[in-house]
Every structure is written in structure tokens, then in C-alpha cells.
Length: 277
Image 1 (cartoon, one colour):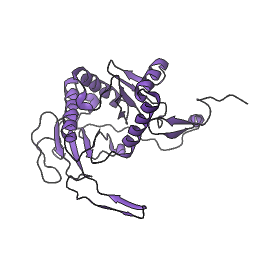
Image 2 (tube, rainbow, N blue to C red):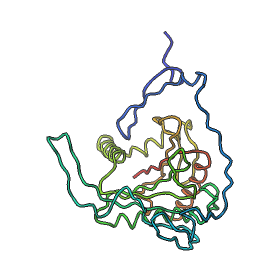
Image 3 (cartoon, rainbow, N blue to C red):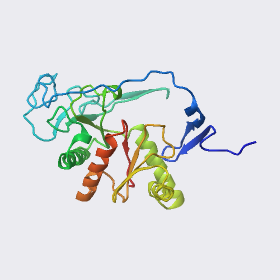
Image 4 (tube, rainbow, N blue to C red):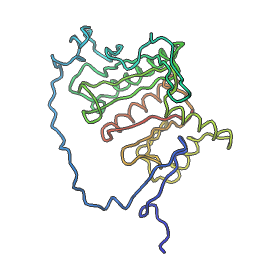
């Protein structure tokens, strides 16, 4: 019987950040593809669109008019998934029908007044300002007494759920830790208790030694496809030092993160940011 091969035989890979297993079937990459292939549309957008509710000076769907902004622009989402004034409450009928109220704040971040650009099109100064805005918003929202977790993210393209092509992202600040960060937090605490070291630090050192899954490496950050990736659209960015959140990054680190994001978003439809903290 042939010996087991990672590139030939079905197997499962353990994700130490969540404790879950990912099924990998590498041999299926040889099958003929008869499924749908989406053509890449040619986009010719104007620098300003009078019908766009995110462009400067335009009226949004809720009736509020945007200022004539020239840099980044942040506003509370007109149709938020979470509300800051949700009253406390819930139910726990026999431990099966469990409901808890959840408070939160949802904001929209317009990266630029230009309607026709996306993150990889920005010059370094503009992209650095986006990173600074993320950090400022994270710090301000974390100061709210009811907020425990702040998530910065971007949905890019109609297939990923973006409702408007204007370059923008979202920030969700929640009262409780979401499922994935909660699992990762618990697993990292357990790893440190068991081994006395940092899970992400150890993993980064292993990947740097192997040089097999690296996408891009900076002095301050490394982008890689994790061994346990949900193939093929998962990229992890790991800091080379411990930093608990975006506000803790210093100037050179923010420049490096901005450059790394520009490179990643130019080629990858999905990404995630990790921290060795």
C-alpha cells in the first residue's frame, strides 16, 4: 500500500485556533470542471456618481446628506444590524429556546471620495489614512462601556455581498465576543497555559522556517495561507510582535499593514487579520 501523501490523499487538518477539523480532498483538483464560470466584468465607473448614496454631497437612503468629504468618512449605518439602545432581555425556556438581547454599533467607513477606486488603487498616503481611521474608530468604540469586541471588515464585489461599488467597509462593535473570535481566544489561552508560549508566535516561526505557504512578508507583518485554510480563499495576516488591537500599532507598523492590504486586496477576494496578542 502506498504511503500517505498530503498532496494525493484525502485527510483532515486541525485548526489549533478553533479546535475544529478541516476536510481536505487534494485529489479532486484533477477532476474536469463543468460548473459555471463567472466572467470578469469590465468596470468603468466615474470618479463621482450622482446616484451613489456614498459619494460626497449625495443623499443617502435614509434622507441624510453626506458632507463634501475629501478623505475618509465614517457614519452610523442607516440600516444597522445592531442597535445601541436595545433593551436587556431574553428567554431560556428549558435550556433549549435560549435568547439574549445584543447591543451594538454598526458604522460605515467610506475609504475615499473617489467612486472609481478600490483599496489596491490607493496611493500609500490614502491607504495609511484608512488604517488610521480603523484604529481611531476601534479605540473610540472600545471605550464604550457596553462594547466588548470591534470587528473591521470589507465586503468587496457583488458576489461577496457588497451593496454598493463605492470603496467602503464596515465596523461592527458588539456587546459579546462573536463565535469565531471567542473560540480562538479560548484556544490561545489554553495553548499558553499548556505550553507557556504564544500559539500564533509559534505557528509563525514554523511557517517562516518552512517557507511553503507565505504570501508576503514585511518587517512587521506576514501574510500566509494557513495550513488549516478553508481552501482556496483564506489568508491570515500575523504581526511579528504582540499587539492587542489596531490602536496599538505604531507608525511604521501602520504603513506596513497598509502596504500589505494593498497587495492582498489586489489579488484576493477574502482576507482576515490575526494578531500575536
